[in-house]
Image 1: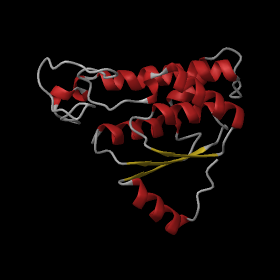
Image 2 (image 1 turned 180 degrees about the vertical axis):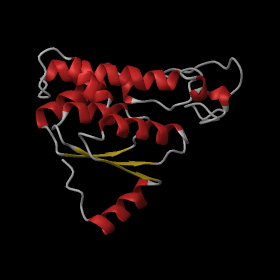
Image 3 (image 1 turned 45 degrees about the vertical axis):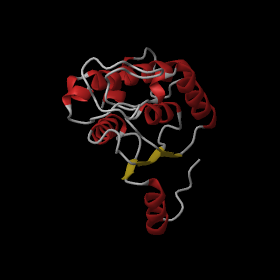
Image 4 (image 1 turned 90 degrees about the vertical axis):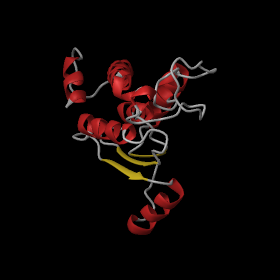
Length: 179
């Protein structure tokens, strides 16, 4: 519903958005995801989702950050931290327009949102994620993304070790035909 609302706000949009309009929608989606991550529940000191930093060290009040860290944020690094990475994924998906997107490592969904926003209008998403770093946050983020994009895209997620999850997916449904 969020994407439909955003698309309706783009002047002259008939649902067939060009590159710049899709990029604008994506920036809004990333801001919403980052707002979710900024909630106090997602901070290390809440203990709700995560009890250690990206450096593997347990949370302690006023601990020093390390190079490339988000300080006390709970969620492990994500593609939304790099404009260059986001732009690369967006450009490739926009030019290639995949119909089936497969991703190992969903985390909180920045790259999934990027690929789906830039890709073919009805692209499907098959994700494999082992949310041991962010238990609870990954799942909640996936459900948010599914509620935003689910009317235009089919989103599936397999939780657990990707090696086993991919094998089980192939055995039960065949090769996914990822593009």
